[in-house]
Amino acid sequence: MNMEAMAKILIGIGLFIILAGIMLYALARLGVYGIKIPGDIYIKRGNFSFYFPIVSCLIISLILTLIFNLIGRR
Image (tube, rainbow, N blue to C red; front, side, top):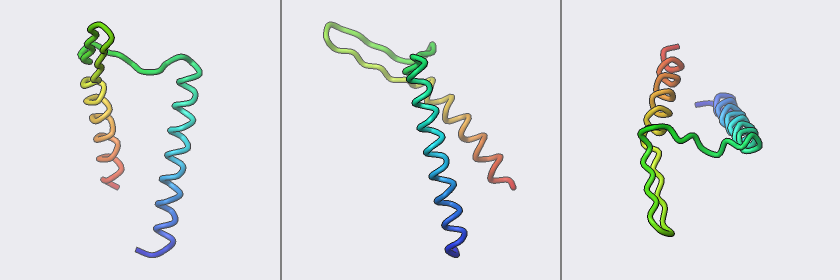
């Protein structure tokens, strides 16, 4: 891999991280800290709470798999 290709990849990764940061900042300003959908596990007992977003993780995984498969077919 030549240096120009490596530079383009690093720039792309940097832009992705910047966009993700902007999106997270905007969501925090809007008051959306986490999307709790049905199927996520939430246990609260006394002073202990446990939250495992299993359905959210599955949905994000499905979306990312579709995106990467579409990009990889070029």
